[in-house]
Each structure stands twice: as C-alpha cells, then as structure tokens.
Amino acid sequence: MIVWVNGAFGSGKTTLVEELRPRWPEALVYDPEMVGFVLREIVEVPTGDFQDLRLWRRQVADLAVGLVEEYGRPVLVPMTLVNPGYVGEVFGALKEAGVDVHHFFLKVSREVLEQRIDGRISFHDDPGREERVRRWCKDRIEQCMAAVDTLPGDTVFLDGELSPRELADSVLARVGASSEP
Image (cartoon, rainbow, N blue to C red; front, side, top):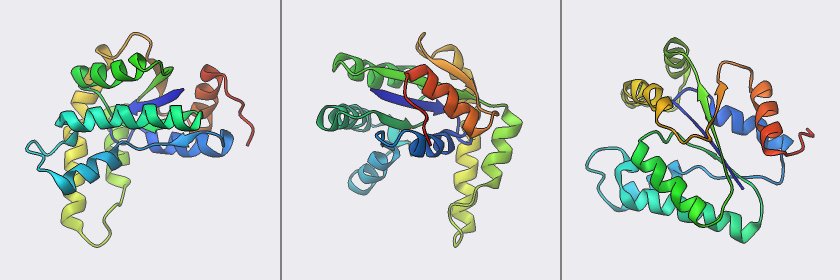
C-alpha cells in the first residue's frame, strides 16, 4: 500500500511522515522530490517545476509501484501534488498497477502555512536562495488551497494544525496499521 501525504508547502507532510516512521517501522519512505532533483541534473525544466515534466510523473508512479512490488512493504510518500491532471495521472498509474493508495491531505490556514515557511531554514549559507525558496512555496499556497475541491473523492482531509502525534494516530487508524512506538 501507498500512504500519500499531501498538502501545501509547510502543511507538515514531512513532519507527519517522521512521526509515522518509528511507529510503523516496516514502512518505507519515498520522497518523489528526489526524482525531481535527479531530473534537474539531467534535463532542463522550462517551467521551473519538475512536476510539469511528464517523465517525473511517470517515474514517480513507476518507482512507487516498484517499491511496493519488490519489498512488499507499505510506502509513505510526503509530496505536494495538487494539479488535477497530474494527480489523476500519478494516482491512476498507481491504481492501474493494483496498488492500494491511501491519500491524505493536510489542511492548514494560510497564516500558519506562511509562518511555517518563514520558520524553515534550508540553506544556511545562501540567504538569497533561502528567500527564493520561501517565495516559491508561498506563491503556491493559493493553488494548494484551491485543490481541495479537485482532489479524488476518497481523499481523507486532516487538520494539519493538530499535533504530529494526533495526525499519525489518525493515519494509522485509517490504514489499519499498528501504532506501537
């Protein structure tokens, strides 16, 4: 099974997956952003967003399916994916491969998202790059918030302002996994 944790940048996707890891040790963590980073080293990304590359979407789905098939373990995927066409393409490929997908979306207010984004430091030695990343994330908040109405009908919406422990409890209960620390 795949547990896809979706939401805007700053919604707590990675934090939730980090909370799930020790409580669900058999689960693998797969961050599709890494696929994007690899592709950026190989090809030009004209729009600046690797999700716009058809190859990224195909590789994300193929690798997720491969992880499930090869290792027979649940896969946790923390990734913002809100373009309706891209969601349909990636999730459609997963379902076509017979993989059970549990899709969670963390809903968080704009104010909290902006505070969280401003509180992150990813590039200590490059303040200019840090500011560009923050602006990029903030510029996508509206698109992420609007996507709530276009996500698949089986999406489970969670209050991303709850504690990571509470969110992990909800996810584990929904997917029927044990929650032993």
